[in-house]
Amino acid sequence: MRLPDAGVPVLARFRYDRADPFGVTLVLTPAGRPPVVWHLSRELLSSGLRVFSGIGAVRAWPSPGQGAEGQLRLRLGPSEAYALFEIDRAGLRRWLERTYASVPRETEAHGVDWDALTTRLLSEP
Image 1 (cartoon, helix red, strand yellow):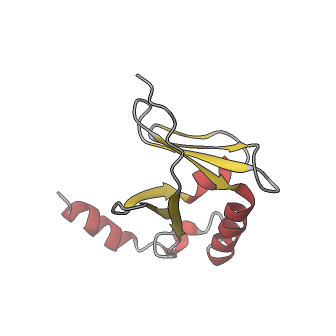
Image 2: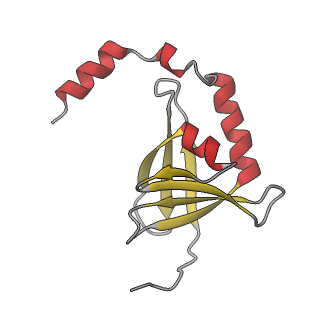
């Protein structure tokens, strides 16, 4: 069963933290609802600006539309029940460029505290 498109605006905030150099946190806040947090790959978003990217529950791809460079479509969730977001591609590209100025491509692993990460992963249930 396919539900009609809701077309509901959602406040989306991207956050980047040098302590997690491979990831981006996306906080989605639908009107009148609690925020929903997704952790995404920075590279997936960057690649999605140019070509279809991702597998499973997170996929991104360029799309014509409003704005100078069109939009990025971001699909979150499994194929049977997902949310589709349209994001200004030029704005996301500029934001990602700032993250790469902070931590350049292919240097992400240099700043990871591997001992702390391993300890955290082994201590989680």
